View (tube, rainbow, N blue to C red):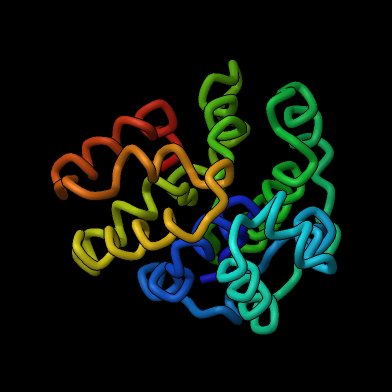
Length: 211
């Protein structure tokens, strides 16, 4: 399976040291993972101090992202499907990075290559679910993994205690403003697996058409 990932989810999984578990859960490896070609620039990876302070949130996440990039693929310019582009342009919530990701997904769909999109951008996913012509995005249905669905799968595969410990460790390492609010609500001291799963399901209920 080819994994097409945006920058946001890569950062969150790197912060929590869950890239390895996520790839295993998705039955893939780093060499099967392709990231946007803007990742180095958009996360300012050539400037460690700025990257950590403004984008990735911790030195540990910075190192893990570099490790992933050493093994994974970088997506080239996406083949343009002009019909899909017309619909993407009608949805203002979809930024250029997500547009490129969806273009690659459509290309894989047409070429019958198995793929999955990993994205932390629920704003774009929510906009697609609310679009008045959803049939044009049918190629994304059941092909999307967001932060919440990924974490639910990880809890199921590796146990709540293991994932909770990793997420809680990340909270101590990551710059407060860069620590995800969903993770803050679902995990931590005094949380139970039941609370965690209910919380994650609640945060992703409005995009379940794609999941």
